[in-house]
Amino acid sequence: MSVVRAFHMAKQSNTALEKSIDETQRKNQLIERQRIPYIAAEQVVLRIASAAAAFCSIALFINGTLELTYCLIILVSAFMVYSQLESAGEMFFMLSMIDASIDRVEEINQSPQIDIDGKEQTPDRLDIEMQDVSFSYGDKK
Image (cartoon, rainbow, N blue to C red; front, side, top):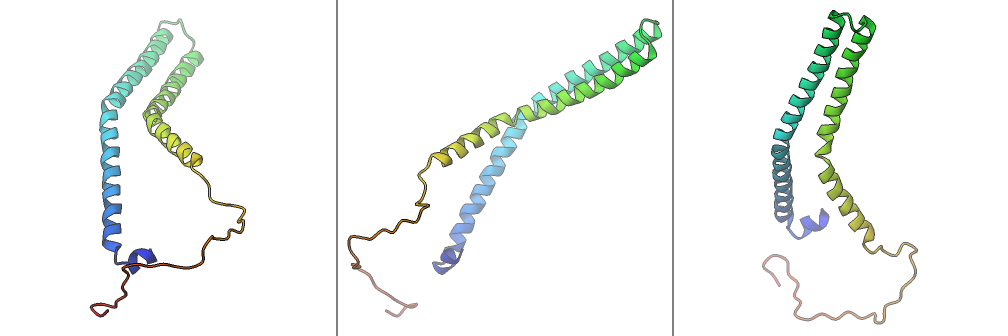
C-alpha cells in the first residue's frame, strides 16, 4: 500500500479492485440464477416424495397393515432422509466452483518457489547504470 501511495496510484488500485469485486459479484449472481430452476424442481420432487411416503405410512396404519411405531418411524425417517438429500443437492452445484478453485490451487502449487534456504548469491557486477533519468520535486528539476 505504501508503494501505491508513494506513486499516487491509489485511485488506479482502487479502480482495479472495484472492477474485480464487481466481476466476481456478476459471475456469482449468474451462477445463482442458473441454479434456481434446478433447486426449485429438486425441492418440489423431494417434498412430493416425502409427502407420499408420509401419506402411504398413514394410509397403511389406518388400514391396520402397519403398526403405530413403524408408522411413526417411517414418518420421521422420510423427512430426515429427504431433508438430507435436499441439502446434498444444494451443495451439488458448488462442485464446479470447488473444481475451479482446486485447479487454481494446483496451478499455484506448481509455480516455482523462491529460494527458501537463503543461499548467498554474489552478482557479477556491482555498478549501477542509468540513462535518461531525471529527478524532480513538483515542477522543479
